[in-house]
Length: 585
Image 1 (cartoon, rainbow, N blue to C red):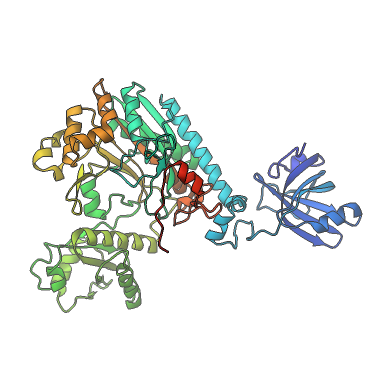
Image 2 (tube, rainbow, N blue to C red):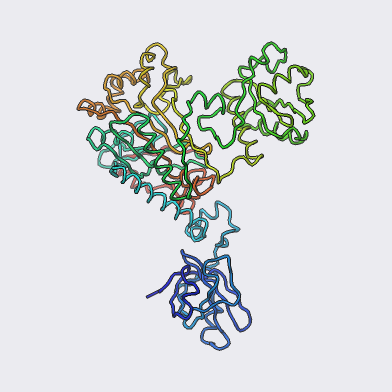
């Protein structure tokens, strides 16, 4: 056998045992007549000792060793005289009696240690080497454990894991599809699923009652830290439920994961915040409620003030940064530069220092006196020593910029602790949103989301005011999952298609199979989908989902390790009846 033990399991109680270990050489230290080798495998590191003075047969082989060589050793476990308390095996070492070189290695392009010298692109190119590093491997071990516990919880709740098709019909109402040509059906195409939405609803019609799947999904959209072209969802659906039934079930799952993975008891019900409140106080449908610093709208407070920046603005709002009146002019200039970044888009920043002695210093002293500023600090519930930061402009754009400023101040003040978790449900989303470019309404979630019963009468007269039975789980400012109660009534579904601008023919062409199924007794149903990659990265305390995916793509959607996407042979294209247009370089 190649090994009797792993490199992470031997302890003092194993002293004097003869063992066989196999693994990769982490380091070699030649100290005169003794050579020390750190041997690594998935489970840990064990120190090997070679007495090259008394064992000349081993010395020649030991001198050839380099980093990442694969070796096997046989030896006796001994207590270390110089113990290493930083690793679990630090109290023992192996006195090597037999040594076998299993495979040599070229010098790796970066150091395979916890703190590596390899940049992101280099490590992605050699991802199989990066995966040998403990931090990366532990992320994937966490992913495994999380997936196991999700299955365990949902199994106990009577959910059935069911696979749905990967090759399906294109339904281009959402993000862009990845298209797959069919060789057997020339000129026709499959799409890779953006989600199993339609199939899981069909499973409810089929009477499965409770379905789940940890499933790969695909969206051809612009990438960022929390997006990949292929990603994994915990996809779920339930029959004979209302919104609170769904929230209760998956709040329970979330609490279970926190308890098992983080040993954290969440003994309270998650807050439920209406979308309108989230936008009013946080400027975001995924608010980070680990800290307060809510928006204060100032339009009425400064109405008719004569200050042109405020008079011309659709929205004026600000935040109160506790204890920040001591900020220097340089600090405030940096904040101004921050909000003026193109990706944030504010025109400028107004500040008011409420000094500890009760006096004021502001960037608008020429326009507002002590009386007006006193009213401002009262509206913000500010205390002496606080700093007011105010933005003005178009409402949506300014609220978004103020949201980014709030998060920036939260980070600067140490209020966004990754070891603190603040979950909430955002509910009562708008059912529809108006798109100026296409001149029609689009579904804010998807066309199968049910409107709230009390708003159905508004569908004809005021469709933009209709609220949806939709909900998102947000933790620490990250949307972890979202879902809705679905439309199960054929007539209401057709009305929804009409509002979205679908002709009868278009609706039938794209969704006819679902509509036909609804004719055979569709139960009330609803569900949710969690971003599995995002959930793992949240538990790992990471900002990017790439670090919890074994073989991720870069920001251009490329796999730099195997150079995908790539060109294919002309013969393959011919078989698929695809003629490529010449691409201008």
